[in-house]
Image (tube, rainbow, N blue to C red; front, top):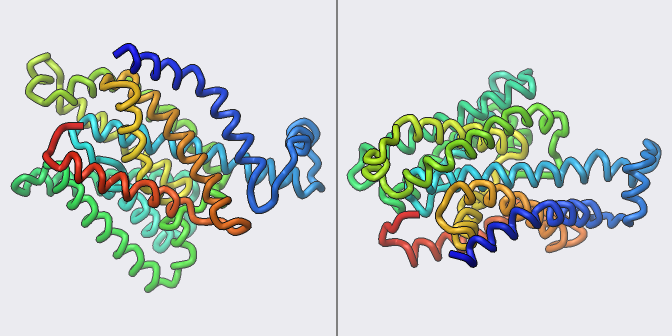
Length: 335
């Protein structure tokens, strides 16, 4: 217990330094390496005619900020889903939530191509909510559907189905090139204006997650125990799903689908910080932010000077972890 408390304090107190170092590394390294002195000059004396200054201010800084935010959002969403469902395989990518957002954005781009950035974010929320409703609705109807592995299979099936419809729709209306961004996340194409629009929603989602943290700790012990302690479980579940919809919807709207962050990070954090979601939520946000930003840096170095899609890097780490969880915890133990 003492070791876990120490790990929690270490994560929280070291996070500012680690985030600054990660931002520095992300700005320094890429297809074109940049000197620290150039970064200083770009921040203090920006020159619009200097190509390196343009790369730093308009490409690399928005990219790393976006990676940090998206990593935090997906990790917090995964932690909330795992705690609420007591399912160690729950995450936005495994449960089809990300696919629902991308599906809604696809329909938006096909049938409402003139939609504003704010409308895209709203449609992404709607898609997340739609997929959650379908997956959890079907799981509740099927015998044994709420078991961890069966829910993961059901979420994967629904997610694949929605992705297939999106691909067919995009091909039919000849917008596949535009849609590819949402299914092959490219952080280097992040829109800085979209990040600004997403910040109010992000703040609301994170505040909701923190507010729910104590209730999720109780709910993770089992619904009967939560009811016995006087918790309004239906209200807590609704608020949790709303938070997941907000955070996942923002993530997909910003950069498209990125898998496995919400699966891996909460397990790492629970191992380090224990089972109290008062600490799991903030620590997941920090570790998730650093994890995705470092994966982004790795994506630039694995096939240098070319970039590897960020989804490939997270999948290389996530798929073995996913199989390990099924192998070691396939007996349905709670998250």
